[in-house]
Image (cartoon, rainbow, N blue to C red; front, side, top):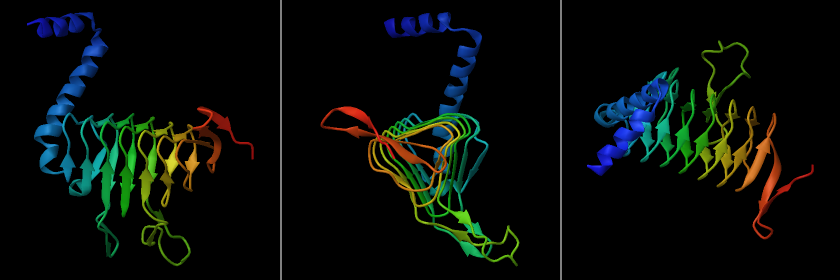
Length: 214
């Protein structure tokens, strides 16, 4: 009874928009548990995906426990493009949080570790469209890739960032807002810019972040 009273006390203190947001989360959990679970490759416990903009190839998408994805997301696992078919996977580790408008588009593999945080409007893809053949329509060009995308545990990806094919970010990396990441970086790096460059590195001996002067 004391637990119910505590919850009731919390609800009484909530404003209208707090309650509205809570309700959205509650119904998103219900939808994930009783609807998405039949279509996705995996939906873990306590997952919620609020009002996604687009989900494609759900059977190729695997989501761990306690993953929370805000509204407007695109989770797109490419199965066919032109005459080619693809056996891709999108894997999202446990306790990952994505703010609004996350876009994960994969033809090969995007793997996200545990406890990763995404700011709003982040785009990850493991392919690009070829442009070398000028006789082809842009809608008919081949998909080209430098390799899968791997995001290590506890990375922070800032707002409006782009991460392209072949990129691996080691554990604990921080990507500054508005960055374009086209190459890999080691664990506990801070990267920023277009294209992104390393600006800080964690020194485990000194136990502090050290600026990189280049």
